[in-house]
Image 1 (tube, helix red, strand yellow):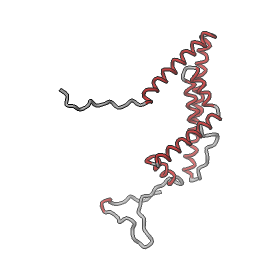
Image 2 (cartoon, rainbow, N blue to C red; image 1 turned 90 degrees about the vertical axis):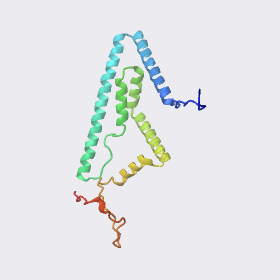
Image 3 (cartoon, rainbow, N blue to C red; image 1 turned 135 degrees about the vertical axis):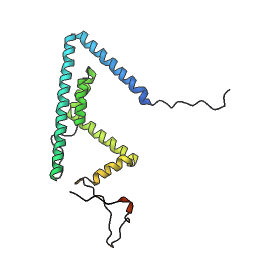
Image 4 (cartoon, one colour; image 1 turned 120 degrees about the vertical axis):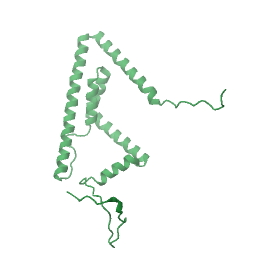
Length: 193
C-alpha cells in the first residue's frame, strides 16, 4: 500500500544538457557530409591535403599566439620587478584567446571548423568579439552586484600599483587603535621588503 505521498520528481534537465549533444552530433554529421561532397567533387587526395594543411596552419597559429602571450607575460613580470609603471600590451596583445581558438578550430578536421577558425583570425572579427565579450561580462558583473568575483576584481584594483599588502592595524591620530589588539594572535612576523 502507498502512504499517499507523491513520488519524488527528478529535477528538470537543463537546456544545455539537451541541446549541446544534439548540436555536436549535427556538427559532426555536417562535417562528414561536407568532406564526402568535396571528395566526390574533386578527389580524396585533395581532401587529405586540405585537412593536413589545416592541421599545420592551426599548429603554427597556436604556437605563434602562445609565444606572443608568453612574451607579454614576461614583459609584464619584468616591468613589475623593476618597479616601472605597467604599460599597455604591445603588438596587439588583445585577442590571443581568439587566435588560439582559431588555431584549434583549424586543427580539428573539417571544413566548417576551418572556416570558423579562419574567421577567428581576422582582426575585425577578433575586435568585435572581444568588445562583445567585455560588455557581456561587465553587464553580468553589474547585474550580480559584485559578489565574490566582483570583490576579487575590486581587490585586484586596490592593490594593483605595487601588489604589496601589509597586515597591520590602524592607529588613529588621537593614539587609540581602531581595533584593540588581541592576545591570542601571537607575535607578528617582521615586515620585510
